[in-house]
Length: 187
Length: 352
Image (cartoon, rainbow over all chains, first blue to last red; front, side, top):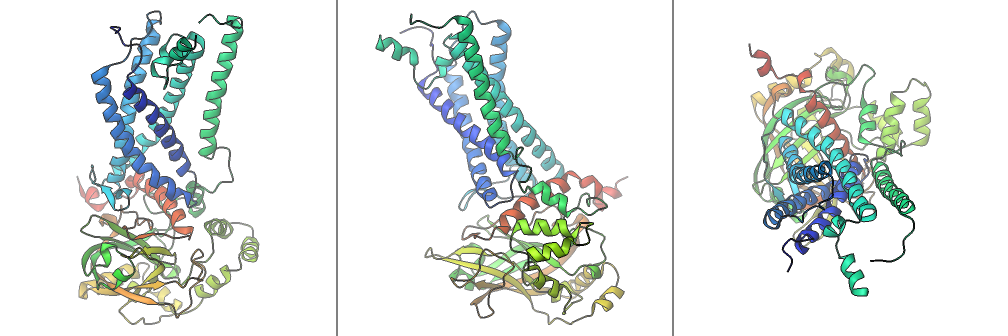
């Protein structure tokens, strides 16, 4: 056994890719549902709410797993500002993954909408009915969604840069399957 | 690990191009989904803009049915509705109601006599934590068949082109029935004498899992007394609120909630088409209005009577309007709650 893990654990990789699909879907549903008055509006809203809560639950599990298992070290030759940026982006991801569902839930609570997950299953209000709170949370939810999307773009660009240009193992640390192992076993 | 590669510079250039293409594709898909490439897409924002009067939006108020009065009361279910839907609201019992009477105008100061369309929003809460919200009007049918047509109607009626309405009516002949209703009796002098209709159809699911497509109405207990428009015009600008306040002060006002069940061939997707008179109806209970509150400080003020907030046992049908109403009401709600400062409550005014 090597002393320092080179890759995220399989559970971390599973959570990462599952949440990647969920979050991207969520952001597309979010902008899509605000742009239409067709019946699909209701379908999109009815997916947006339970998917948001699912992301919240997954994010909390993922945070616990991350605190337990940590992350593989970044390459030693990576410039310090880049390392710092990578670490800050991870904090931002956790803040958004946990914060966005809570903002949405709080925003619906402040508007006295029932928070319906599916069928008769609904969540309690987490905030009192309030115009001011609703407006504040609505704006935060709306603008942070675009910030989240921008962060994902940056993340994808960085991941591909590591995978294609630097080829330094950072992408492989989170890749669903290990391409290096495959190459090694094929040789 | 030692496989031959193209020159590092070319490889790097190719990789950067690939990264740019991936990011560009994701951004383009996102922009398309958001409608940024589709200026013709009918959005909630466009609807709200079309509802806005020439002199500007009614800041802090609903973007339509802007003038209203809050009430509280109870819905007493008689149990008969359980044959149609397993929603708890139809189980025999009493459930609290929050509601709002309103006039169908985007101007919160429009004199009541100038507005033919009146409405009511209700929210019935049940002990299982679910809610049934509905917004109904005194129209017997909706003016047009689709949300797109309603949007075009709003544009035509606000247009400076003198032929806009004629052109619209030629394309949407169903509007003629509304025009006839708009000019014909009976007019009433009270919300308590008005019948309010859901117009849109919904699907109820009963305990056996069978589905019933329905519409519903609130039928007043009070016999309507016809009043001519000229006589209404002589009353004060807010006679409806004064009337309902006085009536309820004298005693609770009642409406029977009647559910009409569609036959299989009935037009469920088109609220401009009334169903034949002989359809099965079920009186499911009584709405009793017990207290009236002015909207400014009233409990209905910050409630969105979104007709798609339904308990389990009810769902939307193939009628496209509830989805459109939900999307547009939400936009109206987001706007007016952000503008609360333009419509302050008297309690906050009174503070030193």
